[in-house]
Length: 106
Image 1: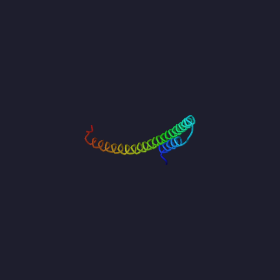
Image 2: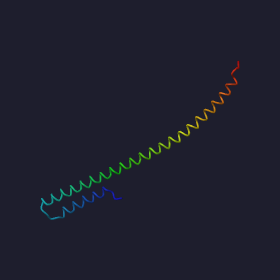
Image 3: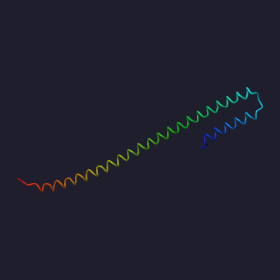
Image 4: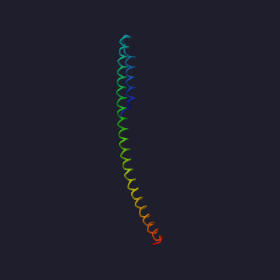
């Protein structure tokens, strides 16, 4: 991909060289400079819009990936939590049985 800054710099240098080498009246040169300035401004505006769109897409893509990763993490965590709860329930059942042996029957 061509660096947009290099393209803009090339346009500026080309415009400057063209103006300096063209033997025309000052008013014609000023008009050309205005036109070149407007063209450069329009190109920069277009480039900035494109960069903004690219960044927006990257952010959206990153957000989607983050949400997907978070969903997977939550799911895995839920399974691990379920395993821990099952283990604790088994330990409580064992403790309950041991506790029964300590109780007196009346």
